[in-house]
Length: 391
Image 1: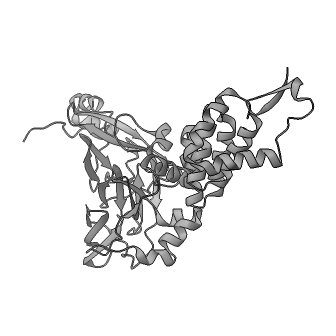
Image 2: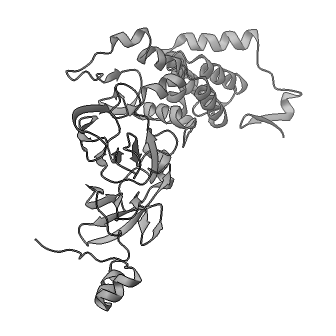
Image 3: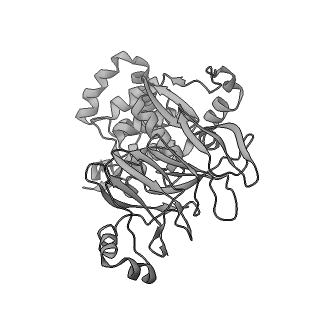
């Protein structure tokens, strides 16, 4: 054994005077670390020893206790330098407790159960969740990441674990993660020592495979936001989704969308926005929005494409929208082409339509039957960036 840190803490006046100055000096040396406690839980994550909760003999802690003041902090010790640091915490924090359980899964810390001095608890909390909905695209929550520990965020949130046959409240239990599930065994409910065994499926509870890569999400969230996913996950289409040997749903393979595009679809479903949207990624995203029946995402993409469309890219957009039956995007491109039909770049681009002769016929027919004429005198105005400007 090697003693890394002796048990020393800020002491009461009576106790410190009895023990002398030596103990007080040790307490000051370790003042940055957690206070004395037992019944806490700990995990090792990214070479850090992470400690949460416990009881110091007079107060139940939610790792939020230093000396005599309860705080919203919790601690990690770097196992290379043996230095303690406080981890920032926001969101809905767990209540103070001890003899609870704690596990790491997918760079998130989960804690379940415990005793708060009055009740044996049956709640579950996760640290490292996305601030909005709990699961989604990592970059959405980068603004609240802690650089020292590789949790996705510094955000606590309560996990809904009310579905199914819920375990009774308990302390002194054990918990382990295997696969995508949290297993708990035994414990004490205040009157009986238990030997029951439970499994809880951790979110996300659906896995998509796109271009050979996995994308994790929550079924309920997707179903609420999209009629397509509602039918796929809960409606008639759900019958085609098989289950594995453990009874968990098999991954769903999607073949008609790219991995990067589908990640942006998931980002939108969780946050109602898409970061870094341009015409370049807006075209495939608009096509995906029609596939997944996302009208608001489609409108966002159309607005962005209208702002970014130019004579250099409009023919490519026109062809892509036709091939993917993106009617809204096709109308945008056709309108722009007709407005700029005499532009040299448009004329040169028309040669690309030899692989899609129907589109060339559509341009000719549309222009002949309803030619797009600029307002007022065509000789007195020019069309630039989707706006008419006087010459």
